Image (cartoon, rainbow, N blue to C red; front, side, top):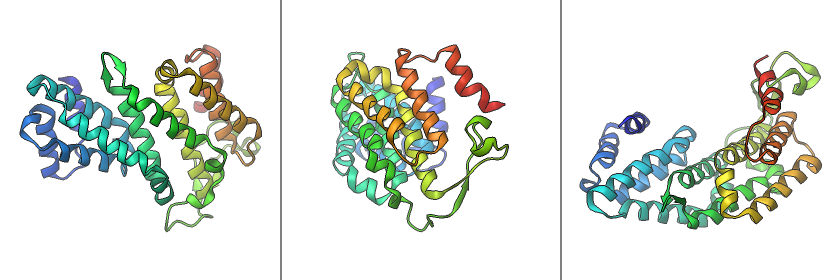
Length: 263
């Protein structure tokens, strides 16, 4: 019940009618159109970065409730069909909106984390998730500056939070200014690293060869990619070391990467 409370709280950004629909789906799924519910959740996940990180928990609850109530999987089938549709159109989505693309990657990784078959991650999601992470790590993805959001000038300065003196230009105390292009690049790196922290270990167990290939790409990006910001380099180095330590954060790494952030 505690988990359900959290999920209900996460739907407060919807209008009252949609909130009512989702609350019913969470508790009494047989009384709502579950295909419609699946589409509402996916649509919101593609435009709301906060919701995309939490939607897996909502989906899990609805799936469990439907299974217990009627022994069916209409919602899961509808959800996976919609995910497959967005996956097929991912390049179009990526070209149209970088923000929606990042939200989609976050969402599908979140679903992979929550959905289980016989207590194992869904095999059908393994390659789509890998493909999305590989796309974030490709050199052309990292360099494609024209993905700046429509209506936002490429030279608009953006203030990023200070990470630490060591990785700020000239050891500056104040936050570095980055243009919108660099911010969008950083968003992609940050999304990739966050998802690997969350599901990397599970994903590697399902297909270790593809994880090796992904990290070979990340190492090349860290060592050879031109134009990486110091923060992006830090993020890539941290995830490379995180995997090398068997997907665990060592005390030394914790101190190096995170202690200085709060200094």
